[in-house]
Amino acid sequence: MPVVPRPDELIGGEPAPEVVVACTSPKSVRLAAERGLPMLLGMHCGDEDKAEMVAAWTRWSRESGRDPDETARIGSHHVSAGVAQLADRREDAVEALVKAMPGWLRQGLDAHVTVDGRHRSMRDPVAYTELLCGLHPVGTPRLAADRLAATAERTGITRFALLAEGSGDLAATEENVRRLGAEVLPLLV
Image (cartoon, rainbow, N blue to C red; front, side, top):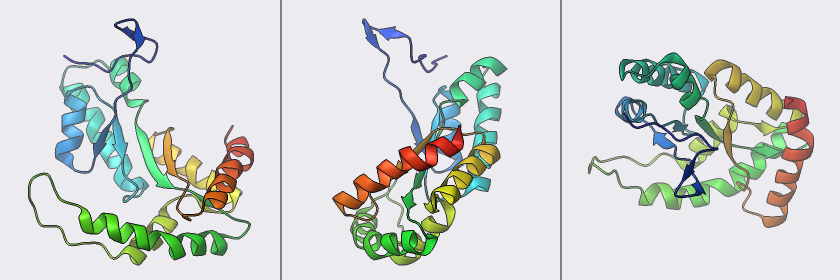
């Protein structure tokens, strides 16, 4: 049964690469669980959906013959993807994203092709940006810390991949990353 190498394991004398599987359907969740791979859960779904995917992954991991400790070890590597934008007022953070993200989302969403050839209608980029702002740490540092802590509590996922460049501006992105490290992370420890 394949398992995820521990981060301290060596393969050919080198640290093992970390692998996570982007899961968007029950089929991909099951596939990751059966192969002993942690999940990357997309920014398009909220905590309830992510918690359901984690529960399904855990069940399928156990059904694949993994003991609870191995299942927990692998599961501790799940990642929740999201958008993070900080400002002194939530409205300003949302405005920064709603001004910039729909343009590049439109381009990416329009180019999306499913691997199985299914037709997919394109999401409305403005509505999608607004959805993301409602689901993720977009607002003040306190709101961002509270949202991250709530996601961790509701889903069991404590690792995050946050898109911090949603404004599309280099200086604003650098400031956003600085604030995430200086003003949000201390609230989470």
